[in-house]
Length: 113
Length: 117
Image (cartoon, each protein chain N blue to C red):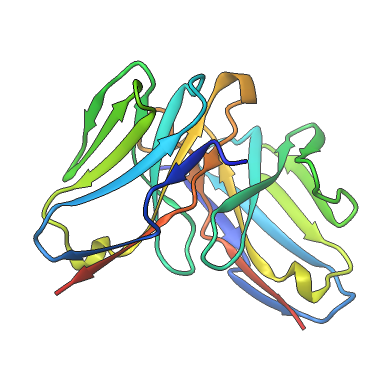
């Protein structure tokens, strides 16, 4: 089965609001977690990543939080814009699996104008 | 930044024919290339890993003779769908590790939409 999964398949957000996309994982041996954005008909685009020994990492308008106690990962997008509408995937990789990426199911984010 | 160029972006072929998909790493060498398949509204499923200079490794349940993978050089990996059937219709994506904005992410190609009629 999947080693990562998402809580909600869809998320509708008002433009300008903050978005929070959640992901749960099962394998405590994961070394890295990565968030990807995929627009229709395109390949996944890297957003941000975090190493398993970290709790938080910030990028431009995005923050990833990692809670290893409950095996939970979240992606926060500040001031959501129409261009943020896409499918978001969390993924994990670990040394024991040759660093192959395992993807979650994906959350479709729709930004309302 | 690092780019993986994937071609074609779309292809329609007749049942029984073969289709080749190419992925090239631009401005960097990719000793490994991952190949994924994605069904509509679904996640990416890893099919196989190609390694330059050696045989590809396939994930469980993936037919090696159906999906031929070749890693001809440090910048080129190809996936050939042989004797294609309508059930092979899907979105195929390649990815090279170690070349992404972050330290731990991979760079993906733009994908190939295969339709078998």
